[in-house]
Image 1: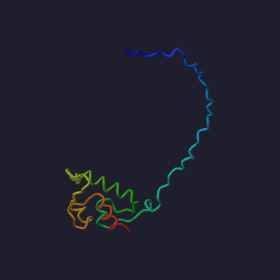
Image 2 (image 1 turned 60 degrees about the horizontal axis):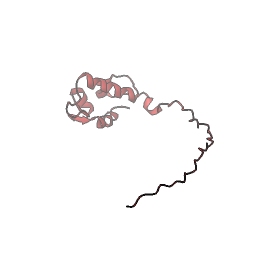
Image 3 (image 1 turned 90 degrees about the vertical axis):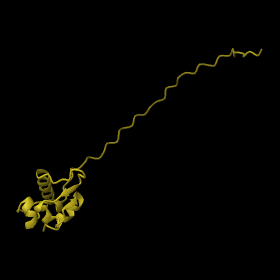
Image 4 (image 1 turned 45 degrees about the horizontal axis):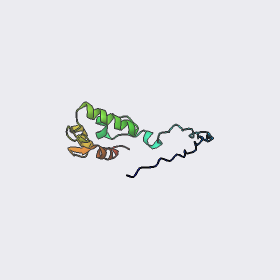
Length: 117
C-alpha cells in the first residue's frame, strides 16, 4: 500500500510586509458654468393667424410656443390614445398642420416653424 509522506519541514512563516500607500490628491473637476440658453430659441417670434388661434397673438419665444401647443393638445385631448407620439388635429390645429388629420410630435415642430416669423 502506498502511503503519502508528510513533509516534516515547515514552511517559513512569511512576515506580512506593509506597503506604503501614497495618497494622491483627488483631481477636482473644473467648476461647471451655468448653461446659458441659446439666444435663437429665446428670441420672440410672431405667430401667424393660424397659429395665433392656438397660442395667442403676441410674440413668443419658440420654447413658449411649444409649451402652449402642448397645453392646448392636453387640454383638448388631442394626443392619440394608442400611439402617444401622434397628435390628432382639430379644426384649429388642422390649419397649422397644413390640413393633415394626424401628425407625429416630431413633424409637428417642423410644421409649426412654417407659421412663425
